[in-house]
Length: 118
Ligand SMILES: [Cu+2]
Image (cartoon, rainbow, N blue to C red; front, side, top):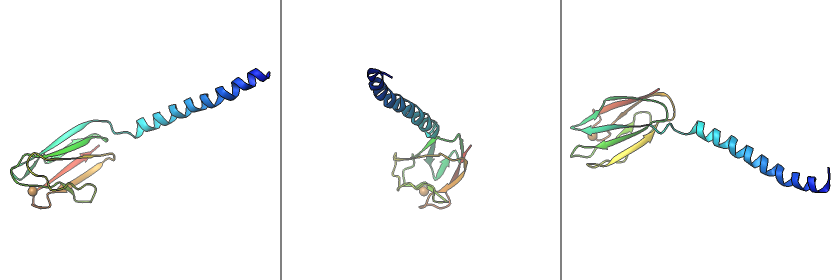
């Protein structure tokens, strides 16, 4: 190898490695990222609607309180927990693992719903 070529390689190789690494890490990030899908649960008249929401993995679910009294949306298994939502306030959670996620309103424990993630 000539001196010039060696010099070129010492510059080109790290660049090549950097490109390969960034390509690899961006494809890993793409796999780990949520699908970007969204879905909504409306809270109205002491009811979560729909009571059972079925969504694909990676979906962000937003609960919106359309009732005129405060409610919460709290996972029975501690997976997510909203603050107290006043009228028109909302809470979002992104479901990254398949499963069934029951939840309830801590102020009115008879209010229940579930999110099924597939
Ligand atoms: Cu409530």
